[in-house]
Each structure stands twice: as structure tokens, then as C-alpha cells.
Image: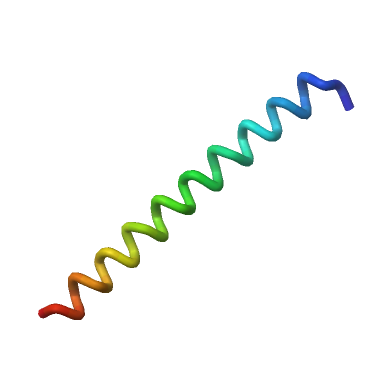
Length: 37
């Protein structure tokens, strides 16, 4: 596997993780908000 491919894969994984973290954050915020009402 070429170094460029590895870099590309790692970038894709990093972006996916970022999306997941943001979704999780939104989820927690919504649940916390819902609990207050």
C-alpha cells in the first residue's frame, strides 16, 4: 500500500471520527435539553 493511499485513508477516518463526535455531541445536548423540560 502506497504512502499516499495510507494518508488518504487516515484523512477519511479522521473525518468520519469528527462526524461521529459531532453527532454524539448533538445527541448529548439534545438529551440534556430534553431532560430540562
